[in-house]
Length: 156
Image (cartoon, rainbow, N blue to C red; front, side, top):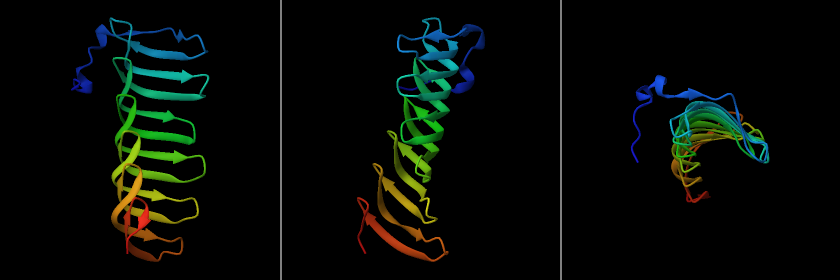
């Protein structure tokens, strides 16, 4: 489904909520469309999951660009589409690792750099969340090795 560009939001057609509360303690503060769907800028907190999202919504789905905190992930900053990490973004994990690059369906996919908390990194291709293709593995001391991966296993 193609969405209109972000600047096509007609601010006069959107209303700001005073806050919407769900049965489980969820909370939304932001803009709604005429159908009372989350649409425009807003903040949503899922109480049972202890997760939040701050950013843009389209027809009740996280979309365009935002900041999110999900289980096991300290923070995500980047593009969203239909409630998923999609496009360019940065993902910070609770173990100290982080990833900067392309996402598809919430997973690292395409060109990106994964930084481990121990100082090592992989600059290369990802597919469906796994290291795939040729790239550069760097250790903390600065040495670099060209490696090829297939499904996160070394090929050469």
